[in-house]
Image 1 (cartoon, rainbow, N blue to C red):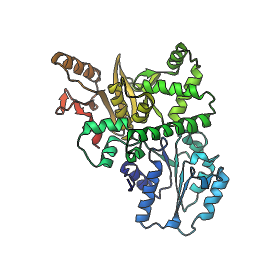
Image 2: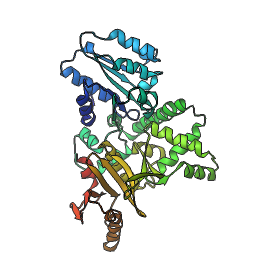
Image 3: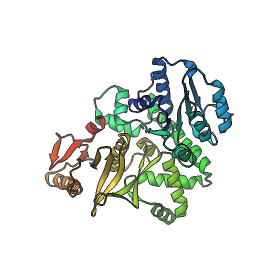
Length: 405
């Protein structure tokens, strides 16, 4: 695949913020496509007449930049290369590798002829000093691995969607896997990615000494996506299995996994009271292929896998996503966006024998029917049936929904 894989959702955001007095911060798990996005943006700049001398692209993972390991060295290196007579586009990839990088970024930001773009594989680049120093002066673009729509577009073929959906899950949504020809190569790639994230982004940064303990927690949470869980629950399960870990340690591991965008955390949300609840949460993994790599494909809960896919898609579409609570009932997702709230139930199928299918459908609709407001409500399933409405609740085929806008 010689041509760069198009990521229009993210590229359009970068283009819209070009030359705006904002630092563009692109975040996401390693190898989700941040560097490719910057290459696409560089191509766009050149197509718009920007000269090579105006573009300075530094990838901190390349050995040639190893000596730029603190903010003064980075800032001075860039300053010496600036063109005084025109706008300079400063692109710094994996900026978290630079000690106190935020000081260099701030120094470039205040220059009138610098438009600054940075990427990072850890959410903590937007915490602490950077957030304080640059409050109101940056915009975050949150990247994920390929959506199902992007995956299908890359293949250029919309036939056999069920098979392609299965491959999308098992072979991973990381862009580079599309260039690999067999499952053995994909597993080797995912193994390297997993070790890179766990060992480089978490163990080294957090100074974790019990790597086996971290991997045990990771396996547990991967095996329990879509289930309510907590650090206390995980610590108890591990203790029962003879692998005792304190609640505090487990909580630190979970935080590290979310900070590195391996996991996403969805809190409970009281639909009636309109407030987030902190007495339980669900975790979802950024790529199902990583989960299959770690746990295998046997005894897979297809419902929770589908739920994971829908959760990530809602995040991609810009929603703030929670698990809804209405009385004693649970709504899979409440998605809060610019236009208000939407509610989603996700079920692999609501079909079956006459009586069983009806019971499943009623069970899935009940939480949505308990909500008394008039915000949009959806039931997403893998069933290939005509789109129907159940008293205003729209039942849609989830693959059609994933391929939509």
